[in-house]
Length: 179
Image (cartoon, rainbow, N blue to C red; front, side, top):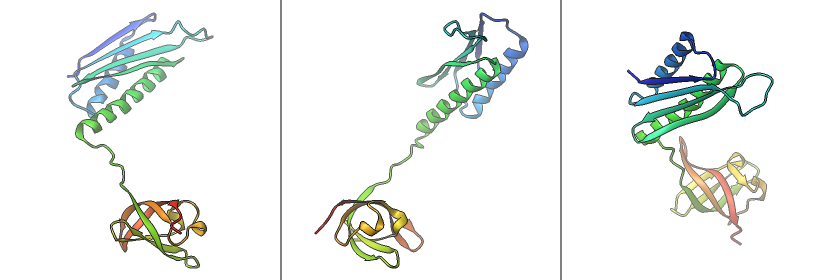
């Protein structure tokens, strides 16, 4: 069971509000089951001179090796402020879990090559990579300059992607003319 500590300041507390907060906190266990504690503080902000009262929600979530904190989620409706605070905390928790698991996005390796063949009327060409492989490209794969300005012998940078019919060059960018 997740230990949840709730503090309500400068406003009346109610069993319905506490129940709502506990349910929101317990839902965090769906994203990570090793949460150590959850501290929630709700109060009416005195910093903003506003015609209505602004509710502030602060959440401190303890997980192994880290504290995840959400501060200053303001709204005139306490339940909207709670929803926004827990949504921000959920994003932080998901990011933490991805890093713990090693699910970090790998950046694609950019390669270098030379434009070896270009069939302008047919709208495609081939790049010979530094590794000796040929990579297909079309106007949709060009980042800079456009397809018409790319010439034979241009040195390019690209990302090689395996496709069903062979290797394809994506995000092709001309580095310099090879002439």
